Image (cartoon, rainbow, N blue to C red; front, side, top):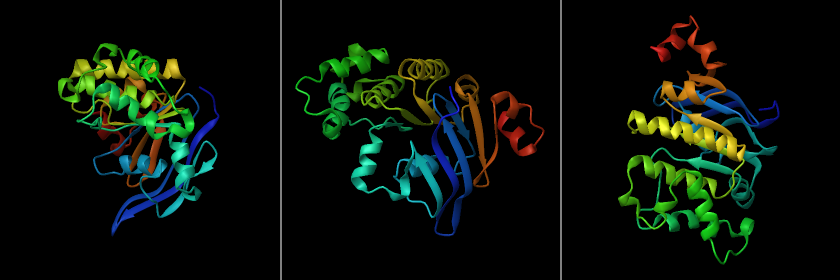
Length: 245
């Protein structure tokens, strides 16, 4: 990990009607870092990462991703930038009507400008599946997969684009403890193999402890406190201590 900044969020504001979600949130993601963002349900964590990839507009502040200002990009420029950003949705978001192979081929077809026309996608699909240990699942349908397998396939679909950044939204939610540990180990492996920089949104304190290089607590719409897991765990602030009970 270096001190090279990959994402910079400054004074970010976002509200829905009269409901203020983000009220001056600041954050930096460094190259090669696993940054965990924790906060209560509804605190704006998922909204924040959706703002980063342009899925949500924001009412104030700025976001820079690899030197590009998100609020100033047109549709085509934003679409091109997204090929370098992997997004692992909380519910995996696989297409139920597509096989595993077709789910992984989908982003390759969609981003043909980056990859060109690929006559045989099998090598790329297999590489991605092998990286998550599920090469044998290539011809299965999502309905034939367990929750943990779906999460792995969704990660493989993200990895097939060779992203520089991965945004994880609650990667262990809904999984049993053993499967959750497997996903955490897989995330570590992905970082080592692909040299990704990652933001991990999670409520899972075990996940945060295992995966984070640094943590931010999002409280009252701001980056209330940040530091290592040990730094935050040893805090005497009642608002911070509440996360570690």
